[in-house]
Image 1 (tube, rainbow over the protein chains, first blue to last red):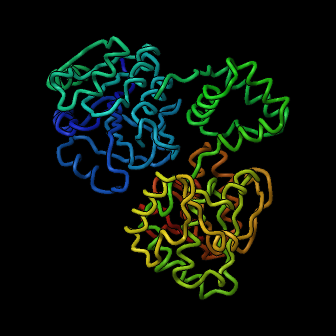
Image 2 (image 1 turned 90 degrees about the vertical axis):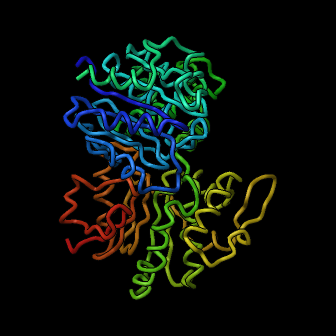
Image 3 (image 1 turned 180 degrees about the vertical axis):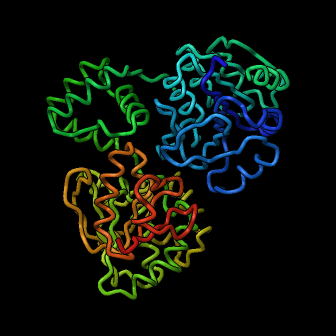
Length: 186
Length: 276
Protein backbone atom coordinates (compact mmCIF):
# COMPACT_ATOMS: atom_id res chain seq x y z
CA UNK A 1 0.00 0.00 0.00
CA UNK A 2 1.25 3.50 -0.74
CA UNK A 3 -0.08 4.83 2.58
CA UNK A 4 1.40 4.49 6.03
CA UNK A 5 -1.79 5.39 7.90
CA UNK A 6 -5.48 6.06 7.41
CA UNK A 7 -7.09 8.77 9.52
CA UNK A 8 -10.84 9.21 9.77
CA UNK A 9 -12.80 12.05 11.34
CA UNK A 10 -16.49 11.95 12.09
CA UNK A 11 -19.19 13.41 14.28
CA UNK A 12 -22.98 13.38 14.39
CA UNK A 13 -24.34 10.77 11.99
CA UNK A 14 -21.08 8.93 11.45
CA UNK A 15 -21.51 6.03 13.87
CA UNK A 16 -23.30 3.85 11.31
CA UNK A 17 -20.67 4.19 8.60
CA UNK A 18 -17.88 3.74 11.14
CA UNK A 19 -19.32 0.45 12.36
CA UNK A 20 -19.94 -0.72 8.76
CA UNK A 21 -16.35 0.17 7.93
CA UNK A 22 -14.94 -1.60 10.98
CA UNK A 23 -16.84 -4.77 10.20
CA UNK A 24 -15.63 -4.70 6.59
CA UNK A 25 -11.92 -4.15 7.22
CA UNK A 26 -9.97 -7.38 7.69
CA UNK A 27 -8.12 -8.35 10.81
CA UNK A 28 -4.67 -7.96 9.30
CA UNK A 29 -5.16 -4.59 7.61
CA UNK A 30 -1.73 -3.37 6.64
CA UNK A 31 -1.73 0.13 8.19
CA UNK A 32 -2.92 1.69 11.44
CA UNK A 33 -6.39 3.23 11.26
CA UNK A 34 -6.79 6.37 13.36
CA UNK A 35 -10.27 7.47 14.40
CA UNK A 36 -11.01 10.93 15.71
CA UNK A 37 -14.70 11.02 16.54
CA UNK A 38 -16.60 13.59 18.53
CA UNK A 39 -17.89 12.01 21.71
CA UNK A 40 -19.27 12.89 25.10
CA UNK A 41 -16.40 14.25 27.12
CA UNK A 42 -17.41 12.86 30.49
CA UNK A 43 -18.11 9.32 29.30
CA UNK A 44 -14.73 7.70 29.26
CA UNK A 45 -15.68 4.06 29.08
CA UNK A 46 -17.82 2.01 26.74
CA UNK A 47 -17.36 3.72 23.38
CA UNK A 48 -14.45 1.49 22.37
CA UNK A 49 -16.48 -1.54 23.49
CA UNK A 50 -19.45 -0.43 21.40
CA UNK A 51 -17.21 -0.11 18.34
CA UNK A 52 -15.36 -3.35 19.12
CA UNK A 53 -18.51 -5.43 18.71
CA UNK A 54 -18.34 -4.97 14.95
CA UNK A 55 -14.61 -4.59 14.47
CA UNK A 56 -12.25 -7.28 13.22
CA UNK A 57 -9.26 -5.29 14.38
CA UNK A 58 -8.61 -4.53 18.05
CA UNK A 59 -9.63 -1.00 19.07
CA UNK A 60 -7.24 0.89 21.30
CA UNK A 61 -7.82 4.14 23.11
CA UNK A 62 -4.13 4.95 23.22
CA UNK A 63 -2.15 6.26 26.13
CA UNK A 64 0.24 9.15 25.63
CA UNK A 65 3.34 8.35 23.48
CA UNK A 66 1.94 4.99 22.37
CA UNK A 67 3.34 3.79 19.03
CA UNK A 68 0.99 3.14 16.13
CA UNK A 69 1.02 -0.37 14.71
CA UNK A 70 -0.62 -1.84 11.60
CA UNK A 71 -3.70 -3.93 12.23
CA UNK A 72 -4.96 -1.76 15.09
CA UNK A 73 -7.61 0.92 15.31
CA UNK A 74 -6.69 3.95 17.41
CA UNK A 75 -9.64 5.81 18.86
CA UNK A 76 -9.09 9.32 20.27
CA UNK A 77 -9.88 9.11 24.02
CA UNK A 78 -12.59 11.26 25.62
CA UNK A 79 -11.61 14.78 26.68
CA UNK A 80 -8.13 14.66 25.13
CA UNK A 81 -6.80 15.98 21.85
CA UNK A 82 -4.85 13.34 19.95
CA UNK A 83 -1.81 14.45 17.96
CA UNK A 84 0.10 12.11 15.67
CA UNK A 85 3.81 12.78 16.08
CA UNK A 86 6.71 12.32 13.69
CA UNK A 87 7.91 8.76 14.16
CA UNK A 88 4.36 7.39 14.25
CA UNK A 89 3.28 7.76 17.83
CA UNK A 90 0.50 9.42 19.77
CA UNK A 91 0.83 12.60 21.82
CA UNK A 92 -2.22 13.46 23.89
CA UNK A 93 -3.09 16.97 24.98
CA UNK A 94 -5.62 18.72 27.17
CA UNK A 95 -5.38 22.08 25.41
CA UNK A 96 -8.66 24.01 25.22
CA UNK A 97 -11.30 22.69 22.81
CA UNK A 98 -10.89 23.56 19.14
CA UNK A 99 -14.16 24.09 17.23
CA UNK A 100 -15.86 23.35 20.58
CA UNK A 101 -14.34 19.88 20.38
CA UNK A 102 -11.82 17.88 22.38
CA UNK A 103 -10.77 15.68 20.65
CA UNK A 104 -10.63 18.02 17.68
CA UNK A 105 -10.46 16.43 14.23
CA UNK A 106 -8.56 19.46 12.91
CA UNK A 107 -5.72 18.91 15.36
CA UNK A 108 -5.45 15.16 14.72
CA UNK A 109 -5.61 15.65 10.95
CA UNK A 110 -3.12 18.54 10.83
CA UNK A 111 -0.56 16.73 12.96
CA UNK A 112 -0.92 13.49 10.99
CA UNK A 113 -0.58 15.49 7.75
CA UNK A 114 2.68 16.92 9.00
CA UNK A 115 3.99 13.54 10.17
CA UNK A 116 2.96 11.36 7.21
CA UNK A 117 2.98 13.86 4.30
CA UNK A 118 1.94 12.07 1.07
CA UNK A 119 1.72 8.72 2.86
CA UNK A 120 -1.54 9.63 4.56
CA UNK A 121 -5.14 8.94 3.57
CA UNK A 122 -7.62 11.27 5.30
CA UNK A 123 -11.37 10.74 5.33
CA UNK A 124 -13.96 13.19 6.65
CA UNK A 125 -17.43 11.88 7.40
CA UNK A 126 -20.83 13.14 8.49
CA UNK A 127 -21.01 15.77 11.23
CA UNK A 128 -22.85 18.82 12.49
CA UNK A 129 -20.00 21.26 12.98
CA UNK A 130 -17.03 22.62 11.08
CA UNK A 131 -14.29 20.61 12.72
CA UNK A 132 -12.12 18.61 10.33
CA UNK A 133 -12.30 20.79 7.22
CA UNK A 134 -9.16 22.77 7.99
CA UNK A 135 -7.26 19.63 9.00
CA UNK A 136 -8.31 17.86 5.81
CA UNK A 137 -6.96 20.81 3.85
CA UNK A 138 -3.65 20.43 5.67
CA UNK A 139 -3.53 16.75 4.61
CA UNK A 140 -4.17 17.79 1.02
CA UNK A 141 -1.56 20.58 1.20
CA UNK A 142 1.05 18.14 2.50
CA UNK A 143 0.46 15.83 -0.45
CA UNK A 144 -1.82 13.28 1.21
CA UNK A 145 -4.97 11.84 -0.34
CA UNK A 146 -8.32 13.11 0.94
CA UNK A 147 -11.82 11.72 0.72
CA UNK A 148 -14.96 13.60 1.74
CA UNK A 149 -18.17 11.72 2.35
CA UNK A 150 -20.74 12.83 -0.23
CA UNK A 151 -22.95 15.36 1.62
CA UNK A 152 -26.01 13.77 -0.04
CA UNK A 153 -25.02 10.45 1.53
CA UNK A 154 -24.09 11.89 4.96
CA UNK A 155 -26.71 11.85 7.72
CA UNK A 156 -25.56 15.36 8.71
CA UNK A 157 -24.00 17.28 5.83
CA UNK A 158 -22.38 20.28 7.57
CA UNK A 159 -18.95 18.78 8.11
CA UNK A 160 -18.42 17.43 4.58
CA UNK A 161 -19.94 20.58 3.07
CA UNK A 162 -17.55 22.80 5.06
CA UNK A 163 -14.62 20.76 3.76
CA UNK A 164 -15.86 21.07 0.18
CA UNK A 165 -16.07 24.85 0.63
CA UNK A 166 -12.35 25.13 1.27
CA UNK A 167 -10.72 22.32 -0.70
CA UNK A 168 -11.09 20.05 -3.72
CA UNK A 169 -10.80 16.51 -2.40
CA UNK A 170 -9.37 13.65 -4.40
CA UNK A 171 -12.65 11.79 -4.01
CA UNK A 172 -16.21 12.52 -2.95
CA UNK A 173 -17.69 9.13 -2.09
CA UNK A 174 -20.72 7.52 -0.51
CA UNK A 175 -20.22 5.43 2.62
CA UNK A 176 -20.38 2.26 0.53
CA UNK A 177 -17.74 3.56 -1.87
CA UNK A 178 -15.48 4.64 1.00
CA UNK A 179 -15.50 1.10 2.36
CA UNK A 180 -14.78 -0.33 -1.10
CA UNK A 181 -11.92 2.15 -1.49
CA UNK A 182 -10.36 1.08 1.82
CA UNK A 183 -10.73 -2.63 0.98
CA UNK A 184 -8.97 -2.18 -2.34
CA UNK A 185 -5.97 -0.70 -0.58
CA UNK A 186 -4.96 -3.91 1.14
CA UNK B 1 -10.12 26.34 13.54
CA UNK B 2 -9.08 29.40 11.62
CA UNK B 3 -6.04 29.48 9.41
CA UNK B 4 -2.98 29.54 11.63
CA UNK B 5 0.42 30.89 10.91
CA UNK B 6 2.38 27.81 9.79
CA UNK B 7 5.76 27.41 11.38
CA UNK B 8 8.29 25.42 9.45
CA UNK B 9 10.41 23.14 11.55
CA UNK B 10 13.46 25.31 10.88
CA UNK B 11 11.61 28.45 12.04
CA UNK B 12 10.49 26.59 15.13
CA UNK B 13 14.07 25.54 15.84
CA UNK B 14 15.19 29.12 15.29
CA UNK B 15 12.76 30.40 17.93
CA UNK B 16 13.57 27.74 20.49
CA UNK B 17 17.30 28.21 19.92
CA UNK B 18 17.06 31.94 20.56
CA UNK B 19 14.98 31.33 23.70
CA UNK B 20 17.63 28.88 24.85
CA UNK B 21 20.46 31.31 24.32
CA UNK B 22 18.63 34.37 25.71
CA UNK B 23 16.97 32.76 28.71
CA UNK B 24 18.43 29.26 29.07
CA UNK B 25 15.01 27.65 28.71
CA UNK B 26 15.02 24.40 26.76
CA UNK B 27 12.09 23.30 24.59
CA UNK B 28 13.98 20.47 22.93
CA UNK B 29 12.35 17.77 25.05
CA UNK B 30 8.80 19.05 24.62
CA UNK B 31 6.31 16.98 22.59
CA UNK B 32 6.91 18.54 19.22
CA UNK B 33 3.53 18.81 17.52
CA UNK B 34 1.64 20.29 20.42
CA UNK B 35 4.28 22.87 21.37
CA UNK B 36 4.64 23.86 17.71
CA UNK B 37 0.87 24.23 17.47
CA UNK B 38 0.84 26.46 20.55
CA UNK B 39 3.60 28.64 19.12
CA UNK B 40 1.66 28.89 15.85
CA UNK B 41 -1.44 29.97 17.71
CA UNK B 42 0.39 32.66 19.66
CA UNK B 43 2.21 34.00 16.64
CA UNK B 44 -1.12 34.18 14.79
CA UNK B 45 -2.69 36.05 17.68
CA UNK B 46 0.27 38.37 18.23
CA UNK B 47 0.85 41.65 16.44
CA UNK B 48 3.99 40.32 14.78
CA UNK B 49 3.61 39.55 11.08
CA UNK B 50 6.47 37.08 10.77
CA UNK B 51 8.79 34.82 12.69
CA UNK B 52 11.77 37.16 12.65
CA UNK B 53 10.01 40.13 14.22
CA UNK B 54 8.34 37.83 16.74
CA UNK B 55 11.70 36.33 17.54
CA UNK B 56 13.38 39.67 17.95
CA UNK B 57 10.71 40.93 20.34
CA UNK B 58 10.98 37.71 22.30
CA UNK B 59 14.72 38.02 22.82
CA UNK B 60 14.78 41.70 23.69
CA UNK B 61 11.71 41.99 25.91
CA UNK B 62 11.82 39.79 28.98
CA UNK B 63 8.24 40.49 30.05
CA UNK B 64 7.02 39.51 26.58
CA UNK B 65 8.97 36.27 26.96
CA UNK B 66 7.60 35.55 30.44
CA UNK B 67 4.06 36.20 29.31
CA UNK B 68 4.55 33.95 26.33
CA UNK B 69 5.80 31.09 28.52
CA UNK B 70 2.76 31.44 30.70
CA UNK B 71 0.46 31.49 27.68
CA UNK B 72 2.18 28.45 26.21
CA UNK B 73 1.52 26.46 29.38
CA UNK B 74 -1.70 24.55 28.99
CA UNK B 75 -4.39 25.45 31.55
CA UNK B 76 -6.10 22.73 33.61
CA UNK B 77 -9.20 21.63 31.77
CA UNK B 78 -11.79 21.81 34.54
CA UNK B 79 -12.39 21.13 38.23
CA UNK B 80 -13.10 17.51 39.23
CA UNK B 81 -11.99 16.15 35.86
CA UNK B 82 -12.54 12.36 35.98
CA UNK B 83 -14.84 12.40 39.04
CA UNK B 84 -14.05 8.72 39.82
CA UNK B 85 -10.46 9.70 40.60
CA UNK B 86 -11.61 12.30 43.14
CA UNK B 87 -13.92 9.74 44.72
CA UNK B 88 -10.95 7.45 45.11
CA UNK B 89 -9.02 10.28 46.77
CA UNK B 90 -11.87 10.99 49.16
CA UNK B 91 -12.68 7.41 50.11
CA UNK B 92 -9.28 5.71 50.02
CA UNK B 93 -6.23 7.91 49.66
CA UNK B 94 -6.99 10.85 51.96
CA UNK B 95 -8.12 8.55 54.80
CA UNK B 96 -4.83 6.63 54.37
CA UNK B 97 -2.87 9.89 54.44
CA UNK B 98 -4.60 10.98 57.62
CA UNK B 99 -3.21 7.92 59.39
CA UNK B 100 0.35 9.06 58.75
CA UNK B 101 2.25 11.71 60.63
CA UNK B 102 2.31 15.18 59.06
CA UNK B 103 1.03 14.12 55.62
CA UNK B 104 2.08 16.21 52.65
CA UNK B 105 0.44 16.65 49.25
CA UNK B 106 2.38 18.12 46.35
CA UNK B 107 0.65 19.48 43.23
CA UNK B 108 3.30 20.36 40.64
CA UNK B 109 1.31 20.18 37.42
CA UNK B 110 -1.49 22.72 37.76
CA UNK B 111 -1.16 25.79 35.53
CA UNK B 112 -4.48 27.49 36.24
CA UNK B 113 -5.68 26.13 39.58
CA UNK B 114 -8.62 23.84 38.82
CA UNK B 115 -6.72 20.77 40.11
CA UNK B 116 -5.71 22.68 43.23
CA UNK B 117 -9.24 23.86 43.96
CA UNK B 118 -10.62 20.34 43.47
CA UNK B 119 -8.11 18.94 45.94
CA UNK B 120 -8.83 21.66 48.51
CA UNK B 121 -12.59 21.16 48.21
CA UNK B 122 -12.29 17.43 48.85
CA UNK B 123 -10.08 18.11 51.88
CA UNK B 124 -12.61 20.66 53.13
CA UNK B 125 -15.45 18.19 52.65
CA UNK B 126 -13.80 15.54 54.82
CA UNK B 127 -12.63 18.07 57.40
CA UNK B 128 -8.95 17.52 56.65
CA UNK B 129 -7.97 20.93 55.39
CA UNK B 130 -5.82 21.72 58.42
CA UNK B 131 -4.48 18.22 58.87
CA UNK B 132 -2.66 17.81 55.58
CA UNK B 133 -0.01 20.14 54.21
CA UNK B 134 -0.52 21.12 50.57
CA UNK B 135 2.37 22.37 48.43
CA UNK B 136 1.55 23.86 45.03
CA UNK B 137 4.47 24.41 42.69
CA UNK B 138 4.94 25.65 39.15
CA UNK B 139 7.92 26.58 37.04
CA UNK B 140 6.39 30.02 36.43
CA UNK B 141 5.52 32.59 39.08
CA UNK B 142 2.89 34.02 36.71
CA UNK B 143 1.06 30.70 36.81
CA UNK B 144 1.23 30.59 40.62
CA UNK B 145 -0.25 34.10 40.75
CA UNK B 146 -3.03 32.94 38.46
CA UNK B 147 -3.75 29.92 40.66
CA UNK B 148 -3.90 32.09 43.81
CA UNK B 149 -6.49 34.37 42.20
CA UNK B 150 -8.86 31.43 41.63
CA UNK B 151 -10.70 32.93 38.66
CA UNK B 152 -12.68 30.37 36.69
CA UNK B 153 -14.15 30.95 33.26
CA UNK B 154 -17.95 30.53 33.22
CA UNK B 155 -17.94 27.71 30.67
CA UNK B 156 -15.40 25.76 32.71
CA UNK B 157 -17.36 26.52 35.87
CA UNK B 158 -20.47 24.85 34.43
CA UNK B 159 -18.53 21.76 33.32
CA UNK B 160 -16.94 21.61 36.76
CA UNK B 161 -20.26 21.86 38.56
CA UNK B 162 -21.53 18.91 36.50
CA UNK B 163 -18.35 16.99 37.36
CA UNK B 164 -18.88 17.78 41.03
CA UNK B 165 -22.36 16.27 40.88
CA UNK B 166 -20.94 13.10 39.34
CA UNK B 167 -18.35 13.04 42.08
CA UNK B 168 -21.29 13.28 44.52
CA UNK B 169 -19.69 16.02 46.58
CA UNK B 170 -21.40 17.10 49.76
CA UNK B 171 -20.50 20.80 49.74
CA UNK B 172 -22.71 23.45 48.17
CA UNK B 173 -20.44 23.96 45.18
CA UNK B 174 -21.67 27.40 44.15
CA UNK B 175 -21.23 28.81 47.65
CA UNK B 176 -17.47 28.57 47.24
CA UNK B 177 -17.46 31.02 44.34
CA UNK B 178 -18.49 34.60 43.73
CA UNK B 179 -19.75 35.53 40.28
CA UNK B 180 -18.20 38.65 38.85
CA UNK B 181 -18.39 39.92 35.27
CA UNK B 182 -19.07 36.50 33.79
CA UNK B 183 -16.31 34.78 35.76
CA UNK B 184 -16.45 32.74 38.94
CA UNK B 185 -13.96 33.60 41.63
CA UNK B 186 -13.12 31.16 44.37
CA UNK B 187 -13.53 32.63 47.83
CA UNK B 188 -10.02 33.28 49.15
CA UNK B 189 -9.96 31.17 52.34
CA UNK B 190 -9.36 27.80 50.69
CA UNK B 191 -6.71 29.10 48.31
CA UNK B 192 -4.87 30.63 51.27
CA UNK B 193 -4.24 27.14 52.69
CA UNK B 194 -1.46 25.78 50.40
CA UNK B 195 2.16 26.84 50.30
CA UNK B 196 3.21 28.08 46.87
CA UNK B 197 6.68 27.68 45.45
CA UNK B 198 8.38 28.21 42.09
CA UNK B 199 9.98 24.89 41.13
CA UNK B 200 11.15 24.00 37.63
CA UNK B 201 10.95 20.20 37.61
CA UNK B 202 13.47 20.00 34.81
CA UNK B 203 16.11 21.95 36.71
CA UNK B 204 15.46 22.40 40.40
CA UNK B 205 15.47 20.28 43.51
CA UNK B 206 12.14 18.79 44.46
CA UNK B 207 10.46 18.56 47.85
CA UNK B 208 10.83 15.42 49.93
CA UNK B 209 8.61 13.32 52.23
CA UNK B 210 5.59 13.67 49.94
CA UNK B 211 2.68 11.31 50.64
CA UNK B 212 0.68 12.16 47.53
CA UNK B 213 1.75 13.83 44.30
CA UNK B 214 -1.06 14.99 41.99
CA UNK B 215 0.54 15.36 38.58
CA UNK B 216 -2.16 14.74 35.99
CA UNK B 217 -1.91 15.53 32.29
CA UNK B 218 1.26 17.57 32.61
CA UNK B 219 3.92 15.12 31.44
CA UNK B 220 2.04 14.62 28.17
CA UNK B 221 3.66 17.83 26.92
CA UNK B 222 7.13 16.30 27.18
CA UNK B 223 8.92 13.55 25.29
CA UNK B 224 9.87 10.30 26.98
CA UNK B 225 13.35 11.56 27.87
CA UNK B 226 12.08 14.48 29.91
CA UNK B 227 9.17 12.42 31.26
CA UNK B 228 11.64 9.92 32.72
CA UNK B 229 13.85 12.64 34.20
CA UNK B 230 10.87 14.18 35.93
CA UNK B 231 9.40 10.84 37.01
CA UNK B 232 12.71 10.01 38.57
CA UNK B 233 12.51 13.14 40.70
CA UNK B 234 8.86 12.60 41.56
CA UNK B 235 9.63 9.01 42.56
CA UNK B 236 12.36 10.20 44.90
CA UNK B 237 10.17 12.91 46.39
CA UNK B 238 7.57 10.36 47.49
CA UNK B 239 7.79 8.45 50.74
CA UNK B 240 7.68 4.65 50.44
CA UNK B 241 4.02 3.83 49.95
CA UNK B 242 3.33 7.39 48.77
CA UNK B 243 0.75 7.90 46.04
CA UNK B 244 1.18 9.28 42.54
CA UNK B 245 -1.74 10.43 40.40
CA UNK B 246 -1.21 10.81 36.67
CA UNK B 247 -3.77 11.38 33.92
CA UNK B 248 -6.06 8.49 33.04
CA UNK B 249 -4.44 8.24 29.60
CA UNK B 250 -0.86 8.66 30.75
CA UNK B 251 1.43 5.72 31.23
CA UNK B 252 4.55 4.92 33.22
CA UNK B 253 5.56 2.34 30.63
CA UNK B 254 9.30 2.06 30.23
CA UNK B 255 9.96 3.70 33.59
CA UNK B 256 10.87 0.43 35.24
CA UNK B 257 7.41 0.74 36.64
CA UNK B 258 7.10 -2.78 38.03
CA UNK B 259 9.90 -2.11 40.44
CA UNK B 260 9.17 1.50 41.32
CA UNK B 261 5.38 1.76 41.42
CA UNK B 262 2.36 -0.43 42.04
CA UNK B 263 -0.67 0.43 39.94
CA UNK B 264 -3.67 0.64 42.24
CA UNK B 265 -6.57 1.28 39.88
CA UNK B 266 -6.08 0.22 36.29
CA UNK B 267 -7.21 2.97 33.99
CA UNK B 268 -7.47 5.66 36.66
CA UNK B 269 -3.80 6.65 36.77
CA UNK B 270 -3.39 5.93 40.49
CA UNK B 271 -0.03 4.51 41.58
CA UNK B 272 1.74 3.84 44.83
CA UNK B 273 5.49 4.04 45.30
CA UNK B 274 6.86 0.60 46.05
CA UNK B 275 9.56 0.08 48.63
CA UNK B 276 12.37 0.66 46.15
